[in-house]
Image (cartoon, rainbow, N blue to C red; front, side, top):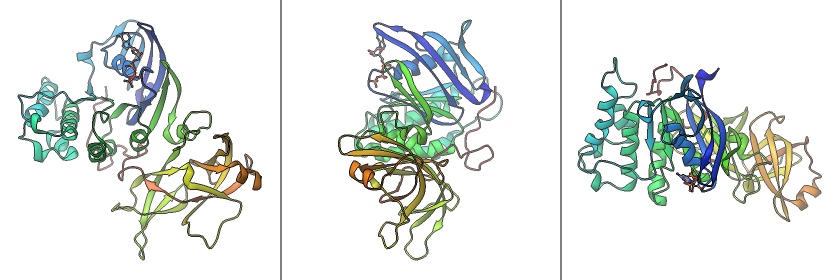
Length: 386
Ligand SMILES: Nc1ncnc2c1ncn2[C@@H]1O[C@H](COP(=O)(O)OP(=O)(O)OP(=O)(O)O)[C@@H](O)[C@H]1O
C-alpha cells in the first residue's frame, strides 16, 4: 500500500550529471539520504520539493505529486524545507518569522493546526528567543527558528538539507538534542540530506545510500551500517546502531539497564524513564569475540550472537558481522585481527559471545526506531490524512 510511504523515482540530466534514482521512505521517522559530495542528494530533495523538474514519479502518503500527467508546483506541495543556512527575515522578530509560515498555512484552513505555536516553541526551546531579532541569534538558534518556521507551515513532509553542516562542532552538539526530540515527538516524515555519518547514526531510522546519481542501497539503519557489502563495514570507525528499551536503573551504581532483543545491556547514562526506547551505538572496534561466555572479566556486557559474515578490513583485520541471539536479531559488528580469527577458527554460522567494551546511547531517549505510534502521548503532530 502506498498510503503509508513516500515513493520517489527521478531520472534525467543536469549538465553532465545524470540522475536515475528511486527510493521509498515511511510516512514517519527520519530517512537520511547519505552519500559523498556531488552524488545527487540535494537534486533529489529539490525534485521532491518540485523546485527541480526531472522525469519521474512521486507519491507521498498515497497522494500523487508527480507522475506522467501530474506535476504539483512547489507552492501546492505541503512541505517544510530547512536549508544549510537559516534564511530568516532580518526585519521580523523570531515571533514574526515563526508566524509568517503559520499564518499562511492557516489561511483558508478549517479546524485546529496539526502543530501549534506553543508546541513548536516548547519543542525547540524558542520561548526565550521569541522577541529577539534574528540578527542577534547564534547559528544554532537561527537554525532552530528556521526549523520552527518550517514546522508551523503545517507540512506533511519535512525536507532538511544538511541542516547542521554550517554549524561549528559545539553548536552542533547543542542543537542535535532538539532534532532528536523532534524526531521522537512528531509523526511526520523527515528526509534528511547528510554526508556526516555521525549525524546519520544519531538521527536516522532509515538510510538511502546515494552514489553517482544512483541509489546503491536503502533500508533500516541497523541493517545498512552493518552490511558487509556496503562501504561502512570496512571503515575505521564503523559502528552499529541498535534499538533498545530501558528496563530500569541499577540500585547500587546507577547504571541504566536496557533490554536489547531479550538480552540485558548496562550503560552509563543520564535520566531516562523505564520503558523508553533508546538507541545504542556500538563501534566495531569495541567488540571482541569469545567462544565461551567469559567470567571474571571487567567487561559488563556480553551478548550471545551468531556470525553472519566476515568481511576484509585491511591486511591485519577483519570485520565480523553478527546477528544477536540465534542470528535473527539486530546486527552488530566486531573488528578483530586475522590472527584471532584464525586462532578461534571463526566462520559464518558459529555461535559466539560478543564482549562489548563500550556501548553508549547514540541519541536522546525516545528518539529512535519509529516508536512514536498514533495515540502515543508524546505525539504532538497529527497530520491530516488526504
Ligand atoms: N542546475 C544544474 N546544472 C548542471 N549541473 C548541476 C545542476 N544542479 C546540480 N548539478 C550537478 O549535479 C551533481 C549533483 O549535485 P547535488 O547538489 O545534487 O549533489 P549533493 O550530493 O547534494 O552534493 P553536496 O553534498 O556537495 O551538496 C553535481 O555534480 C552538480 O554539480
